[in-house]
Length: 308
Ligand SMILES: NC(=O)c1ccc[n+]([C@@H]2O[C@H](COP(=O)([O-])OP(=O)(O)OC[C@H]3O[C@@H](n4cnc5c(N)ncnc54)[C@H](OP(=O)(O)O)[C@@H]3O)[C@@H](O)[C@H]2O)c1
Image 1 (tube, rainbow, N blue to C red):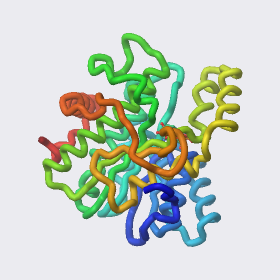
Image 2 (cartoon, helix red, strand yellow; image 1 turned 180 degrees about the horizontal axis):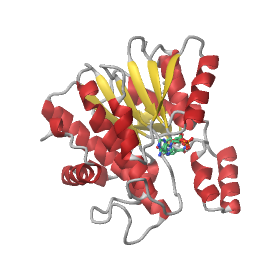
Image 3 (tube, rainbow, N blue to C red; image 1 turned 30 degrees about the horizontal axis):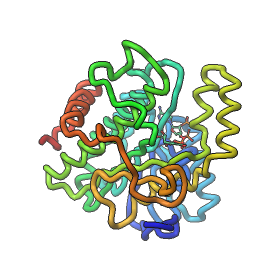
Image 4 (cartoon, protein in one colour; image 1 turned 30 degrees about the vertical axis):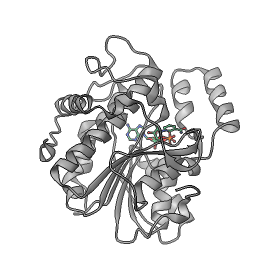
């Protein structure tokens, strides 16, 4: 996979993809490249204005692109349910669980979950569960969930998933990204037990300059923090396009294994896609089962078709 670029994406004509958070950053770049190779891409975004604007930009950059906006707020389970109920296709070749928030001041989602755990993990858990019938009906389908090397900062605390005892914004982010990997591990295990022709894999972008880094400081009014992040993005980060390559590899390369974790090969930070190191706690069957059970309980989405 050394030297793999977006030019290596196989023909995607006839395939349907959903990319969450595709109005900016890595999700936008991934959606555009999938559309360039012929996929019909659903831009699943929380803001209609930003989502339709992204669709217009892709249509300008890629004439003939088949992209459409559909509203999805991962911080509101009612919105996730509405998105899935209105999903207009009977096939889903690719679900990219990309949307995310990082190191925000403490807050909760519409359903009362801590925002980072609620948006980054629970929203995607519910979305995947509700779209499972379309995924299972599509031979060779994939679910790619975008995690981060920051997962290595913290394991989840199964007794305090919503950080109610103590909230530390970076630890909460790290835990949500560990949850992304544990979810992928457990989903892959359940798909295998079910004999399903669906691959669940994970990816991370290394360090890519996007809106992710500045949103947290801006929300908490920390001007110096925002400036610090801007300088980091300018001098140390790779582009959002480069950051999207591991996601695109996990989504489309022919030889992707279930529960694999793809990231930039150079110091796990930048460069073309390669296999990535992950913390051992993200491959623990018992932890995966417990997170799955807790997520079913919290979201009310029972992925009953995938019992083990
Ligand atoms: N950039 C990096 O260096 C880096 C490193 C490691 C991992 N990641 C991961 O990469 C993924 C993409 O992030 P990015 O860097 O591309 O950042 P980004 O440009 O800020 O994109 C994040 C996307 O998520 C969307 N989003 C946020 N909250 C949402 C919600 N409640 N419902 C639906 N969509 C929501 C945002 O929508 P709005 O525009 O409406 O806010 C935006 O489209 C994230 O999962 C992040 O954790 C990024």
